[in-house]
Length: 87
Ligand SMILES: [Zn+2]
Image: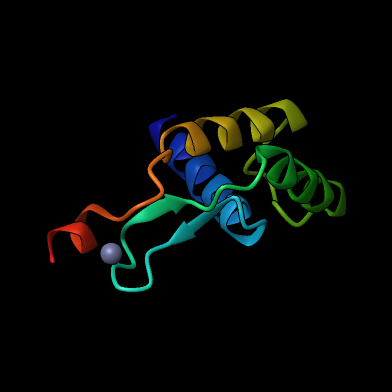
């Protein structure tokens, strides 16, 4: 169950990043930032991939996928990297 959730988060993260809603700091790959785009963009991309079967069996329902995207975007609201800010 926990593993499934992690997998869902990973996939949701990739969708959000590919859609340009979230972005990785160029200096710190582990830091994910908000790119300022509407979350809707990630939903559209996620729906497209879900329809094409590209997400495998990670999500049973479309709704699980959009919820995971919503959560991952909500968890990454900062648009400046704290590690960069320290330098
Ligand atoms: Zn950084």
